[in-house]
Image (tube, rainbow, N blue to C red; front, side, top):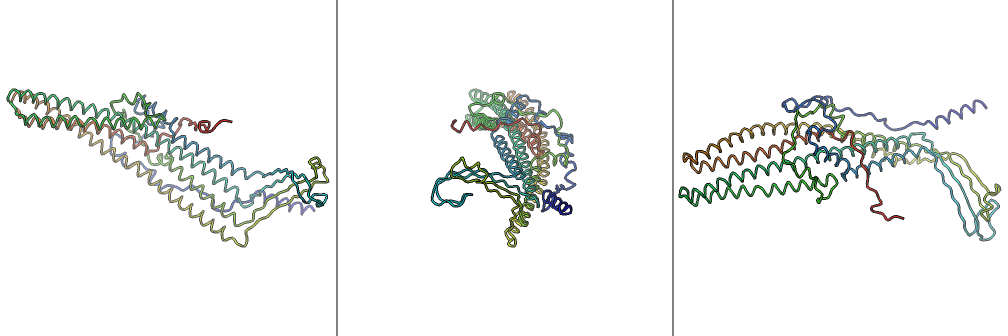
Length: 483
């Protein structure tokens, strides 16, 4: 008897402990070369290998920008959607964990007809009462429940990473819209300055024509330049207003409530220090899309185990008690009760073709998830290097444009003086004027491009999700009628 009891105890321990079938997940390692410093960071003094701070937009030391990003990370509707999706994924995880607990069912019925009661079959149709309670507990012998929990947990973690991807995007889009608004403001100022220069030259040309020194053709030619300079302003104003509306939506406002601080900005934000980019190792740890891809791979791997467990029996311990009587008062009589208890084994053997198909399907999904992970690693590195290369080229472009603007403005000032003295031709004055106008506008446009390129680098580096404020999902009271 003792040996039998020991054997039963051992079998029970095995059944309760079980084993998880299917492959055990191992986090894939990115290529070693990806952890090195960035190629683009070594070619410019404007870049630093210092670590990227969590709140990179604060490097601009612009309170208006700080406030806008804070509002966007709290009120943006894409973020609220991502937060709701995370709550849903966490609910699925709790549902998977519920498989660890017994399932129960309580029933009661008042019916009319003929049925079997503990006292025997009713001789004629009558009203009778039935009540019952059933419970079942699945033994996770082959780890089907364990693997399901692992898959759901990894899916929830992937959704959390997906929410962080939205945070990175929203922060970059908000800073980008603000930079565009400010950049268009600077371009508008340059365009208006250019218009003032051309207007002044036009007035001088008219005066010279009236004095007989120039012809109507000279006035008409200058008029063309004047109208061309005036035509530069409306498209810039339209683009600026459009970006103001984009910014309002990003911070959760309607177009009628444009942020006042952004509307007043006239100069793109500028960094007061070299742009910190860190290295590849920090990038791969920080990018939330890489974390999302890795967690999706973990979930897909666990689902192979869920499918593999279908090859083996499912064992449950169950029991129930029921009572039937001709009236509800008789349900409590022990003589009217029946009960049952014992294990239940279900198995699709020997037809396991469907189960093996499920294993192959799950394996293919895991292979796709692995390919996605590898591709995400390469994309993260490529995005960063492309952003660094674009920024470095624009830096060189800006230096050349600034030098050209300085020379063009000096040449224009000299041309205007010499033209008034009569030692410079009108055609040469027009050429100097057109060159100066173009140079001023080119530098203003390059200032805006530099700010956009910097923000593109920050987005490629994947920063901005750390220590983000809590997002509140919308209340359903707004769309449902109260009781």
